[in-house]
Each structure stands twice: as C-alpha cells, then as structure tokens.
Length: 334
Length: 281
Image (cartoon, rainbow over the protein chains, first blue to last red):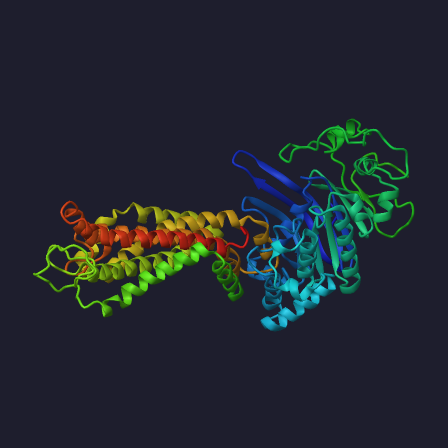
C-alpha cells in the first residue's frame, strides 16, 4: 500500500477500512483507502452511490453509525483523529474542520432562527458573546451573498429556499475560518441553476479564505471546474487519482473512461439513448476476488478475475506534476 | 431560546380557540384561588337548616348543599384547588424527570439506553397501590406524599415518549450537522433535541393533568389520598355518585367543573402544540 509520509498534508488518511456489522453478516463500505489533502487544495471524490465516498469522511469526522467499525488512521494536522474521544474532536470539528451536508432542508435545526444557529458556532468555538457572534453571523451571510441578511437572521430555516439554506450552511462552515471544509454532495438536493451558483460560491470563498476543500460528488460535471485533483472510487476503493484536467482528457481506468462516456455532449450528434454502464456495482457485502470492476469491464482478462490490481503510480504523459495513480492491470494508455 | 417563546406566544394569541380555553382555565384557577373570599360559606361549616338543598341563586347556597348541609360551592372550590395542585405539581415533576431521563437515554443510546429503559420497566412493574400504601404506612398520610407518589410514577410514560421522539430525531441530519460542528452531547440534548420533542410532550403533559386528577380521586376513594373534611374533585364526585338519584346536583356541580377544566386543558394543550411546533405551520 502507498503510505502518506508527507507531513505537509493537512488531512492524511492511511489504510482506512470502514465496516458495518449487520445481524447476520458484515459489510465493508470502505476498503483500505489512503489519501491526503494538502492545505489550500481542492480534492474531489467521485463515485456512485454506495462506493464509500461519504463514509470515509464520516469516519474522519467521528460521525459513523453505531454499528460501524473503522480501522486505519486519519490524521488532521498530524494528530490522529480516528476514534479520538468526542471532547478532543469537538475542538476541531466545526472550527478547523467543518462539513457541509447534502440536504440543506434537513441539516439546519428547524426550531432555531438562522442567526441563532450561526452565532452558536462562534459562541461555542471562538468564545464570542452572543451579540458579537450575531454581528459576525450577519457579516458572513453577506459574504455568502444572502440578500437582506439582517432579515434572514431572524427567520427560521423553513422560510428560506433550498439554495439560500445551502448558502447559510456554507456560511456556517466558514465562520471560524476553517483549514478544511468537507462538502458532501453540496449541490445534489438543489436545482441545476442553483447548483452552478453554489459551485461559484464555493470557488469564491476558497479564493477569499484559502481553505482546503474536499468535494464529494457523484457528478463529474459539478467537480470539473472546481477540483485540483479528482479521486475516483469504486466499490470502496480508490481506482484512479489524477489532476482534474488530466483525468478528463486521458482517463486511465476503464471505469473512469466509461463514466466520462456517459456524460452527454452538447456539441456532438444527438443520441437516441444516453450511454450507460452495463451491469450493477457489487453489493457492499459481496466477497471480492480480483478487480471489483472486472464483471463490467470491456478490457477484463483472466488476471483481473484472480488478482486485485493495486493503486500504483501511472504514466504521467503531460508531466503535470501531480502524481497519477491507477488501480488497473490494463490501464488505458493515452 | 427566548425568541422561540416569543414567537410561540404570538402564534398562540392568533389561535382564538386556544385563547378561549386558556381564559377558561385561568378563570377556573382564579376562582379556585380567590373564590372563597367572596363566598360567605365555609367549606366545613354545617348548615342544618339546608341539608341537601337544591342550587338556587337567591338562597345562601348558590350551588346547593350536600347531605351534611355543607356549601357545595365552597367545597367544589376547595376540591378544584386541591385537584389542580396535585395535577400540576405531579405532571410538572413527571415532565422534568421524564424529559431529562428520556432525552439522555434516547440520545446516548446503546447499553446506557438499555439499562435506563430496564429501570423504567422495573419501576412500572411495581404495583402502584402497594407502593402508595407502603409510603403512607411509613410516612403517614399527607398531600405532599400524594404529590410524590403520583409524580414518582407519572414520569415513566413521559420518559418513554421522550425517548421515542429522541430516537427518531437523533439520526436526523441536523443533529449530525451539530455533531460535525463540534457541539458536545449536553449542548445537543438541551438545544437541539429537547426543543424538537417539546410539541408531543406538551400535548401529553396537558393530557397527564386530567389523568393525574383521575388517579388522585381513585387513591382518595381508597382512603389513601385526600380525606374528609378536605375535598378534591374526585372525592366530591365519588360522594355525589352515591346521591345521584335523590340529589343529582351534588354530582353535577363538581363533575361539570371537572369536565370544563379537562376540556379546556385539552384544547389549550393542542393550541400550545401548534404554537410551539415551527415545522407544522
């Protein structure tokens, strides 16, 4: 396995395995994943539902369900946070390391006014007084381009539209000038036009605050313009990791290539049916011999059934400087 | 938090039914507290000239008298006072203990939850009447003992309800978001869980008051609660039930007060639920 010995990285995850125990069997959602996020970097994790992309960061934030077990190591600023006691986690969660959730309809507490919820973060973490915190909350709403922030502070979450609520949750995650924001499908629950606005907002806030950003998504289109680096996940493992532009230009893993083919093109000939990937991803409980993608892979050979390909450094034809990694016996060459 | 209360008060004021009910409850409470000052008859004075006389506004006894010649108006007021006190104190105790216990059990979950719920099952398995008899034998009969023994049992159901609500709220995303924002368990329970379970809890609490009033009258009937010459609505009704054919007013006066009080409490509780629950507007 590759080890992230790099001490510069803000968040480094080593050999992380997340499993869930069910009454009659156990399920692995994440299998020996290693990754690192450097300060000020934007990394996107892409994969379909159930590929384990969210669970990696649930484990890092200490949010795993009661029946989950996590092994491996997650270090934030060099300190181990996997399985750390809640009081230790609470010193970094919400201030240095924050999270934006998928559904802004449900991730705000329904009975508290927006202003109170925003201010509470500052009262809790920065030790500000409530009145100072409310002023700071108003300023943050302005920064995340919420119109008429003074009025919004006194409204309840249900009085705001989905897009506005997501702006509020993004604002909340930025209140303490975090080092790393984890955005778990921040645009999935929103309209397409609002999605673009939220992505714009994330880009602008990154320019202003300079935090690192982990963007979890199942939509390559959403992450394309924002991410420096993209990690593609399949069945609980990272199958490809590359510079964002590189990945789109020259996918090396057949799964990535197939995903890219599924994005309809605006300029090409109009297709009767959108291309799809044949077959189903493996169930999380299935035993996996060999490559998990082999049953759906056009390039699969005997070796793929028997031997699991390791994530290893791949050719970097353009010399982008960012190490490319791919987990495939027969990667597509450019 | 105060803003939540302000908003709830504003919404409650716009609900005319609930406001009516609130004034009825307030009226009954005021009458129970201050009525005796305006009534020339004491609740324990016997008027041998008017035994079991009918209600009549021009006579000295507005609501009539019972068969010992005691003024029914005075006795009903005393009964209402005692019943309300038992109901409010005991449901207050059950509210405080039940919310705290249930929210902690539901939020912490796992083994703690298991252990805490088994304690509740053991307590609710105890035969209540024996429990009350034991307490009476040990400490002697008093109203405070009645408060204590009813309150000690009343919180069990409340704790179960709060735990159930907490379990359903605990896996909601906003709790996850609060955990991810670094809020500790105590803060989450107090600020994010309890206000969200308060709706059903308030409704249950307003239903507990009548239940407790009923239970008190049951205990009094067995000789374990309020005893002559003191009165509660329950003892008055029990007394009136015996004279139902000859002198129905002895039953109807305290029964009517109880019915009005319970109805108003229920409507008020419903209005309070609507006012407190931001999501259901």
